[in-house]
Length: 405
Image (cartoon, rainbow, N blue to C red; front, side):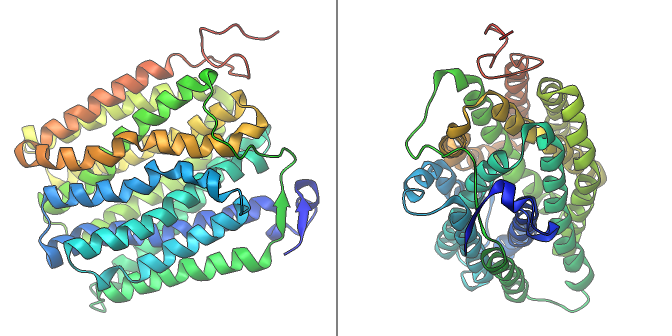
C-alpha cells in the first residue's frame, strides 16, 4: 500500500482518512476482547473449575505482554506502527477464535498469553497513532468518539450474545470462533483499504524515559494496578457470589457499554472544556466511593442489583482515563510519543503482572479487603492528579514547574 502524508490522508474520502482507520480499529479490537471477557468467568468456572486463585494466575499471565510492551520499540525497527497495529489485531482475533479448544488451566494460560500479546501491542501502538494523527485542539473530542465507537462495538457483541446465547443454545467454541473471525476480517480491511499514513514528526525508536514525564508515569502505574482489581474481580464477583449466567453477565456488560457509548463523546467535550486535571480528580473521587461500595456488597450483603449498578458506574469513571493521554500529548516532545507509549504501557503493567495472582489468594480470605485496597489506590491517584497544572504544556508538566509565558 502506498505511503502518503497525514495532510494528503485527510484530503481523501472521509471513509479512507486517518481518523476513519482509527475508528475501524477501535471497533475491531473490542469484538474479540469483549466477547472473551463476557464468556471468560463462566467458561473457566464451568469447564475448568477455576476459583479466585486460578483466575488470579490467569489474569497475571494475561498482563505479562503488557509489562513487556516496551518490546514494541524493537519491533518498530522493522515494522511501521500502522502495520504492527494490524498484525496485533490479527493475532488477537486468531487467539480468541481458538480459546474454547483449551478448556483447562495450562491451555487457558497459553491461549490467553497469545491473545494478550495481540491486545497489548495493539493498544500500545494505537495510543501512539492517536496522539500522532489527531491534532491537540481536537484530541479530547476525537478520542472521546473513539471510546464511544469501541463501546458501541462491545455493545453490539454483548447484544448478540444476550439475544442468541440461550435462545439458540450456543456453544463457547462457536461464539469465540465468530468473534475472533470478525476481528480478523476487520483487520484485513484495515490492511487492504487504507494507505500508509506518514506522521509529520519522525518517532524515536529507542528507549525513552524522561524525568519531566514522571507524573505521567506515576499516573500510569497507579491506573494499571487499580484497573486490575476491577477487570479481574468485579465481574468474577458477579458470577461467583450471585451466580450470573452467560446471558446475565453479558446483559450487564451490554448496559455498561451502552452507557459508555452515550457518555464518552460528552466526556470528551468536558475534558476539552474543563481540562485533564478536573477530569481526573472527578474520576478518582468517584472510583474511591465505588470501590468502597463494592466492599459493602460483602460487608452488608447488598443485592446483585446494587453490585451491577456499581459495575456500570465504575466503568463510566474509568472512561475518563483518556485524559491521561491528552495530558501527555500536551507535555510531550512530538518524537517521544511512540517510544513513551511503549514505556508507559510497561509501567502501567508493573503491578498487573503480580497483583491479580497475589490478590487471588487474598480473595479467598476476604473479597471486601481486595476492594478496600483498590479504594486506597484510587486515593493515591487522586493525590497525583492534584499535581497536574490547569493548563499543562511542555516545560509545565506539574504544578511545581514554572509555566512558560
